[in-house]
Amino acid sequence: MFRIVSLTHVRLRQLVRRLTSLRESRPALPRRWVPRAGVLLLLLVSVTGCRATAWTRLGMPRPVTQQGKAILTLWQGSWVAALGVGIVVWGLIVWAIIFHRKRSDELPPQVRYNLPIEALYTIVPFIMIAVLFYFTARDENYITETSARPDLTVSVSGFQWSWQFQYKQYNVRLVGYPVNPAQIRSYSGPQLVLPKGKTVRFDLTSPDVVHSFWVPAFLFKRDVVPGYPNHFDITPTATGTFSGRCSELCGLYHSEMLFTVKIVSAQQFQQWIAAQQAAQKAAGGAQ
Ligand SMILES: [Cu+2]
Image 1 (tube, protein in one colour):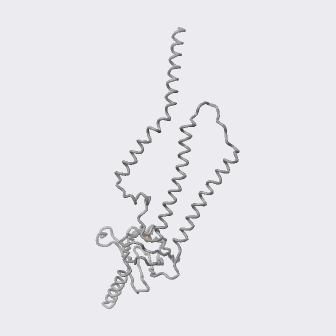
Image 2 (cartoon, rainbow, N blue to C red):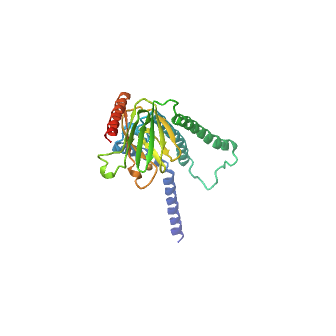
Image 3 (cartoon, helix red, strand yellow):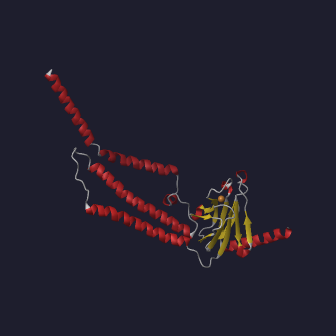
């Protein structure tokens, strides 16, 4: 009887020893998983087929204005700062997991009332917030700055449910109507035409409810509020046609408030203005 109990005891001890050795070998796990995670990430990048610039823009569209470029740089800088902080935090977590595993039931040395560490906890986040605040305030001032003498002023009126664009200095007016999904192939909303390299002022007004003037390629949107005219300036830097939206849920046909922005050279813009003036004059005369 005594022999059986002692044998069982020996087996139990062997089992405990084996389990302990298994636990101790666990730190090798991350070393095995790092290459696998790397291969998985590489596979993910290659199968999504994204272009290199799309990755560096971190989800933002390609900006087509000077102001948009400042917004993109701020966005990228914020991500770099966040990743820097993340790498330090993740590094400390992994270091603690690998090198400071529980060794006994004894409580490790506690760091309460440790003045240097508590000062560090307070000062480091303050510095991080101050740096982010500085760059945000600097770029916000630049983005919202309005020129005393813009080259072109466009009065934008958002109404239920389309847009009116007025070039008052040229006496040109474009009025859209809601873009029905059935006709979207033939009509994509009113088209705003802008000259590249010129300072453009937008004056935003609404006769009914709150809308929001949004051109994703500007990386910027601004509310169109009845009774409170809003303004902002941009300087286009690239030619092309870009889509625009109302980004404030403004009623039943909000989703039909589509428009496009066409950025052309200054010379093409003058030709377009002359053609619009002639067309509107002819339409006025025909009435
Ligand atoms: Cu709207």
